[in-house]
Length: 304
Ligand SMILES: Cc1ncc(COP(=O)(O)O)c(C=O)c1O
View 1: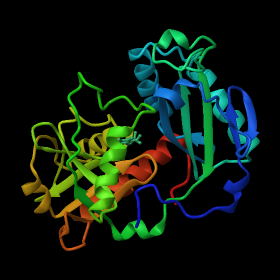
View 2 (view 1 turned 90 degrees about the vertical axis):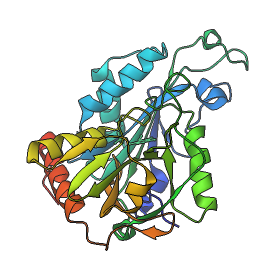
View 3 (view 1 turned 135 degrees about the vertical axis):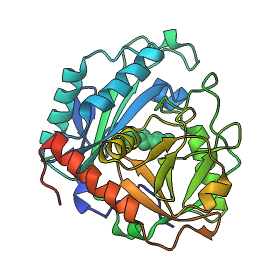
View 4 (view 1 turned 120 degrees about the vertical axis):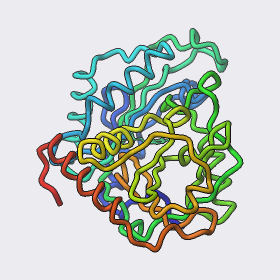
């Protein structure tokens, strides 16, 4: 069983320090209250980011999404993006981390005075937690992961907009369980009209006749990596389309790959047991190289 978020084992992660509202605690002692809105209701927003040679890749894009999400649910961050950067720097320094680091930045509406839903019951300010781990994507992912199409779909934006990177990920977790029970690594999710949309944890692309296709973006996470891939294709003259397409076209694709901050571009080996292409992935490889260069331009990191 592989997942798109498998990382190489790193013993240093056993002793990391975690930021909890300004304090840095050993991972065994880092706690939030059982009254916390994030624990009780999934009422919070998060971002996953990567540190390359001391710089958070595409920091402004992540902060745009984070602050937009928080604003949309009236969650007061309590600091600006410079404050967030300071908290990230503090955590990285406390852990002696400089590169190959993944972080999960989480903000909830904070501790409630009673175990009920109303946001007004959170009265002591938000809870900010930063978990940083030494992290390199596992090399087996190069083989490609197995997707299964799952019954759980992406919803319409007026229910719970898929653009919220919210603590509540139950829709995605259900999809992931369904995929696992179907013997796959990750779930391929359709939109309410039956078009191929996204996976439970990443954005999804196919390559057909040399063209790169991804969903319209209407029902999926507005992934930072997804946007970069589209931008890079456009800049380099690789034909790219955000469009509706069905499983028929996905099964017959020459290549398929996922995008996300953690794994950058992860190849897909099969969908519903059908192998994708012949295993050659020239378009994804080209995009991967372009993406590495874009990260290097953004962070000043050297290209591995
Ligand atoms: C459901 C889902 N799709 C896609 C992504 C990838 O987004 P990004 O490229 O910004 O990491 C994420 C990451 O948070 C996600 O949770």
